Amino acid sequence: MKLKITLIPFFLFFILSCKSNITPPNNEYADSIYVLEKDHIFGGFGDVDNYHHALIINTSEDSIVLNVESPTPEGLKRESIRSPAFGKYAFIPTEFSNYFTIPNMANDYLADEPDTSTKKSHFWNNVRLGPSDGIHVPYSNYLGEGEELFIKSFGVNNFMGLEVISEYKIEKDTANLSYLNIEIKQTIINTAQEKMHTVGIALHVPRVLWTKPEDTYLYKLISDTLITDVKKNVIDHNSGIGEGFGFYRSKGQTIKVQKDILQSNNSFEFIIKMTIEPLLEKFEIYPMYVLQFETKGERVWPQSVITVNNKKYEGPVDYLKVCGLSIPTYILFSIDDGNLRVVSPDEIEPTFKP
View 1 (tube, rainbow, N blue to C red):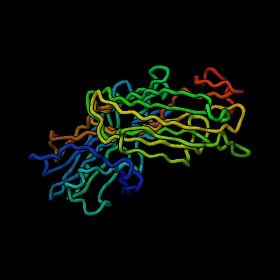
View 2: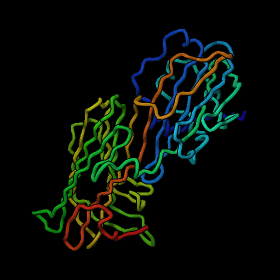
View 3: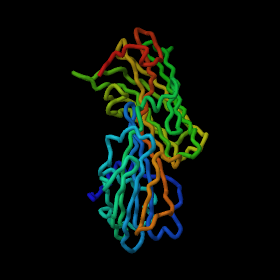
View 4: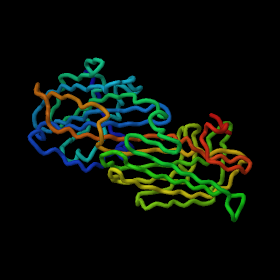
């Protein structure tokens, strides 16, 4: 078997650290191994991938030998481009680390290639772990096209039980007819049966397109106001977004709003009001969304089968699901010779093309 020492990128620790309130294991198995399985779903606009891994830590004082079978989901369309492993990003720290002594992260290993595989499962065999050693058994799966997964109806996106409803208004400013007033309202609803953790949405409204041979300035921002009762919120007025909103790389305003816990059938919302001065006679503004949430929820990936010292492990397996997705809006503002509209991209010929 090929084993690799894993490193922990700081940004992954900051962005994806688990904030779950699940209690740590507390039974006879706690003295042998600790198991956490995690589905990390990411992508948007185009392909959506599910990166899955089983984290197994030897919490005993003796060496153990592991065999791990990782079943693949039924109806697997194809394996992800990130299959079989996501390299050094395999280790995702969680609060459970506080309950175990892991003296050196170099003791954590990534088994990035299975010993054997079938159409239904991948197998990692005879992995020896010393005290406080850990192993990550990763694999990844292609979930489908972003448009097929996200778009519920015009102005409504839905994914994994989290629904985002978008409402827009655009009109001329009455005090200064050369200005435009834009209002964007976002409502985020947990339609799943389980509560969700760290539910956040980032709305990016491009102001400068990084086009060639020179940048294209769409408008001048006169003022903006964020209205929400959610305490964790911020506006970054000079945020750069790679691959923009499906069309361009861009710089503009990014509004970030996050709830630590979103109970089932609960929601939160925010409204961003902007006054702008258009710099072109005709242009379109394509808002873009980045969605992130963590939850136990329904399993995306079948649970791994773990054998410890030739005995099947039937102890606790903590499960988390983490999503970080770029969500297409399919709604935009069209300003053409004073004709102000909120429309689908299919209804107009875009002024700017990549």
